[in-house]
Amino acid sequence: MKTELKVGIFAIVVIIFLSYMTFKVSTLGIAWKKGYRLHVTFDNVSGLDEKSRVKIAGVRAGMVEKILLKDGKAELVLLMDPKVKIYEDAEASLTTAGFLGDKNLELWAGTSTKKLLKNGDRIKYTKPAFDINTLANKLISTATYVSELAETIQSIFGETEKEALSESIRNLRVLTKNFNEILEDGREPLHNILVRLESFSQSLDDKGPEFVDNLNKLAKDLRELVEENRGAFKESMENIKVASKSAGNIAKKIEKGEGTIGKLYKDEELYESLSSVAEGASKTFEVVNKTRTFFDFSSEYLTTEGDWKGYFNLTLQPSKDKSYILGIVTDPFGSTEIIDRNINGVTTREEKIERKIEFTVQFAKRFADLAVRIGMLENTFGVGVDYFLFDDKAKLRFDAWDFSADEARAEKAHMKIGFDYTFFKYFFVGAGMDNLLNDSRRGIFIGGGLKFEDEDFKYLFGAAPRIPSQ
Image (cartoon, rainbow, N blue to C red):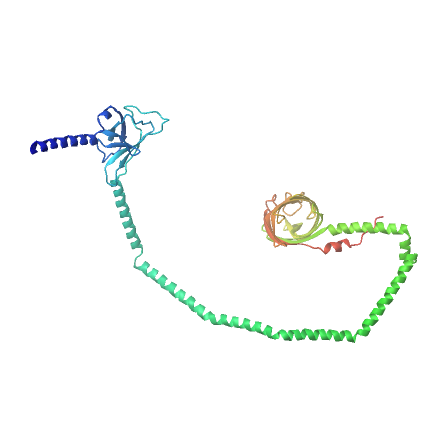
């Protein structure tokens, strides 16, 4: 064969091969023409061309057959491999092969439990592509904003502000320097204090032997005192022996039934009677011993009257659930006197109010955290309720008395509600509303006082003489 014929045959083979490869790359092949077509709509498919690949999970599954403009949007016709199944919840998105590469159409096939899409159906769900131009515009806008912010900061920090900032830094340096100077100046006084402490410790060490000598001298003086009074001590011992002998004689007489004590010892009836009396006295003292005694002194300022009201209460508590309350109250509105005056034929009536001492006697019964009180309250019948909180540190109290409205400028009973709180065990403060039902005297009160338990008073109270029954 001639050389020209060989070259011609080679050229024809190369052209046929390139034509085949071009056809293979640019299309899906003859068999795919029998695939099914799906439709999908995007707002913008910039960079996507016809014959672009359609991929699922990165694997080629079809191609973009046509791109049409419909109602201002891009209508894509996808030619899908007949072996690929797409479901009605599928989603289409535009992807880029590389940061500046070509665009492809990526599909998520959907859920197999959903309806299968057929030829001519539409993919409803889409995701827009990443737009480099939009990102660039946003970066330009951001750069513009940063530039404006820098200019604003520069305008805020003018020469005056820069000078003020520099002055603050200089002041901070001066402050640090002064602090260091103070430390330097205080080193010597601090050193002097340490030296004095060391001197004091040394003086104690130096006086140690002297202190021991003083103790020895004291022991020697005591020994000499005992030597000087040896005779007196001997005489005291003799007196003790005589007293012991006399006690023995008295015991013998008591055993024989001589004397009052001896008769008491021998007479069983008298002994039983005395034992009964002693037993009664023992029970009385037992009750007194169990009784707890509390004192409290307090004062309240009445905002409406502009005056103070004082209280002194003695509480006897024979048991945890019973109490007896005895109290004295100094009431600034305790006594009221109506005076009629006739001046030039005109009668006027004056109300004279004086401070009065009033008394309180109540019985209290406690049920868990609730206590009920009844008796005489400020010279009239009254009742009260207490509710204890925080292990008896706080108390919410309500009192009502003077149901006949005999107090000054009172038309209804006197009712009072307050809250007390105890701190440091002995002190308490209180506040509340006074005279709730009477508009002319209703007001706030605040106060405080002292409360303590007297262990000695109950013994004095128990030792008081008893009046014998008739």
